[in-house]
Image (cartoon, rainbow, N blue to C red; front, side, top):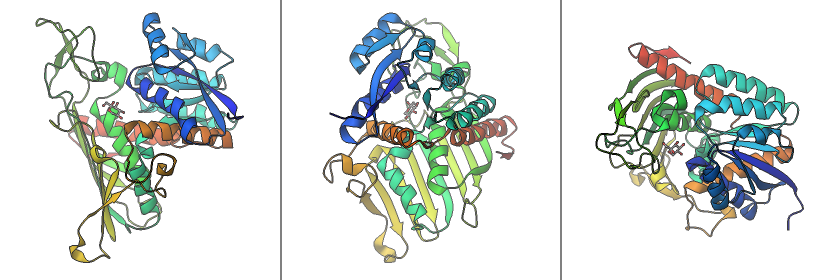
Length: 397
Ligand code: SOE
């Protein structure tokens, strides 16, 4: 039985991300040695019956119907924000001011202004030993963490191209109902911030380079959708009558943009092409990244998430891309799980996120990605929207 000091968590929200985070808080201490012992102390949600059912299903000790009670409780050390983006700033601000650590789902906020305020508060709190992290969980997919290691070791040489796509298809059916993800006042943006943000953060983190400018195009294919009472899943169909009233979609359905990177520690900056859409019929969660360097290339597709394709120009030209099966003990995170070849899943990225967050807090150092890292993503999102609103004109970040 661990003697580690408890880290008592209060989570706000209990839908898809709430379920993924709950799994991570429960599982992390069972597969990794942590300096603090996470406890699922309380979950908050507005609907009393719903949050009680969620607490029972997801393993939370108590419930609140107002997130502010989590802030007031002195038996909670960390607030985990798993709600739509329009609530992130208010909850994170209250938590940091109350001296509670914060894990905030991505994107950090619904505007650069909110993200800037949150970053200032987080940097001040860090000086008091109170830390905040933003949940760009794909950094903790072993294959992408390995890609970061390979770029850092110089295996690719100077990066010339970044090619990032995040392809889903849950809105391909024009009768799929409205959801908060399609309401700008709740989500901040559509596919751009919901899934494009992951590509932006992963590309910057893995290359070590920041995006300095973009030229963009946004599209909304289906401007109105049926309002449904009970949604099932992301874009699932609740009980929608044929004459269901229509709601207005106020966000992008798809985003494409070109980008210039700053080169980081390298000499020349890479150039990039990004795409995020929910209409790539047949693509379910294809978060893809390809980097072309002067010495080698690598390619990743989340739909084959335990593998990394690697082409090394130093090998015989006809060697082609080879498949690195990222399940060896020396690969990031993998050694704590199963023997080689058994593979991991989507949920493991969230567990690794908890491992790195709890370890950083235990060590008294800033976890990554910080709110400042997430603010840089927010700035790119805003530049994309600004460029798209101005005839795709080049927009500095
Ligand atoms: C929906 O597009 C979504 O759930 C995103 O919101 C998540 O961040 C991503 O991990 C999976 O797809």
